[in-house]
Image (cartoon, rainbow, N blue to C red; front, top):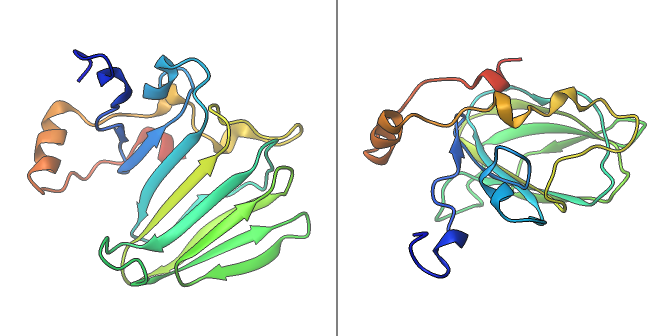
Length: 175
């Protein structure tokens, strides 16, 4: 699409192994081509129990989590339980229905753990700055660098377009 005046703004298939849709302004990401890219957005499917983000942290900007059913025609069809810890005191919350969580800047959040999955659900986060950063003093090791993230190969993309599954775990998500 880049052959037209506005084609450069269409970032097709910014998909990383997971699979996840992801765009931001960090070096190595498709959004980095635009100076001052305004947000970091990630969408992924939670299909099995396990930890997502283990270390509590905060950001210097607001963040939103969207957690919704995996059926695109019915987001209320929710089949999982996700534990999210909030605040310095690690207040425990269980998400078991479609939920949007507003996390004001400076509010400590995480760990996040998927406890149970009967039906896959979707997870989306929006960080209101183009580059993922944490508040001073936080441990940034839980956020994989773009150099560790992997795109699908052209052969894998073709399989996925045909509805075939590709079973490969990103190096960034193995830690």
